[in-house]
Amino acid sequence: MARKRPKNGRWRLWQHALTESFAYSGIYSAFGVFERSVTLNLNGFTLDCDSLAVNSGSLVTTGIGALNITEFGVYVYEAATEKLRALENTMSFYRDTSEVSLLNRNAGVAPVRVSSELFQLLRLSKDVAEKSENAFNITLAPLIQLWRKAGNELPRPDEIKNALSLCEIENLILDEDSAYLCKKNCMIDLGGIGKGFAADICCGLYREMGVASAFVNLGGNVKTVGNRPDGKPWSVGIQHPDKPRGECFGAVMCSDLSVVTSGAYERFQIIGGEKFHHILDGKTGFPALSDLKSVTVISQSSALADALSTTAFVLGLKKGAELIRAFAETSAVFFSNDNKIFSVGTPNFIHVLTRQ
Image (cartoon, rainbow, N blue to C red):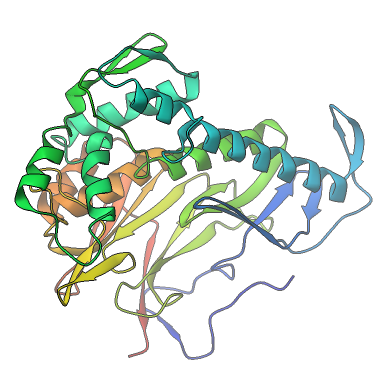
């Protein structure tokens, strides 16, 4: 499959030329390249897998025998999709049988033993909550559900107040291999960190199976393994918040990094003629009144980038930048409401000017 390139005239580079691969995805092993054009959708998770060519003469030794590179690619891809389905069964808010649903049903009743993966994610969530003064909060589920059910009317002040009384991260208690929501009707929702965590797990699996180069996109959460097959870093475009999808204001050159963007420009609802975006402020109970249009976070951990991008948006430029600096080897690009671009620790960021 041919690589996707920007249309002629669309891009004008401010610093220097981007490498060729703005948005192609794939699985590449040290033994060759696997060609497959397919998109897997798993309740919000999207695993894109495209590549360039096939070296069908290479053999890879696996637990099921020797495979040529095409067979190996299918083997790796299917292992990744199986793992993603297992993670969804663990973390889904909407599946009655998931560990998250079991934890929510037992709020105020009893602790629940959870898998090591969910425990790891809950611990990271509490760490980000602490460092952000609870601007990141997975216990906002009651408030999120209230807004999801709002329809064409704003939630009443008393409804928001009641929901906020349940949204305290301190209500989530972790102890060895168990988790407990100590207040009845408390709930967690991992929508602000789950896709990033899944990308981390997926890329970890790729490395374990001998994949040398990969580009994974889970619903906009991008993570790369190694460099491109030609040895150059991957180029991950950053969506311009005021332009049609695919128009970028910049790109991040990356290897073994994750790039995640959060903003108010895609998901929103119109109530009484006014636009309300989906990123809620746990202090007010309303969509965050931010001085930013979008925040892009670059980190080795996609889960951390996922959580920090949303949190920095809620906090705004000044406090958001302070939050990013609190995490080692993490950087960010901020796009402000007055159309200015600010970066924190991003030597691999390239500013691109789109044609007006």
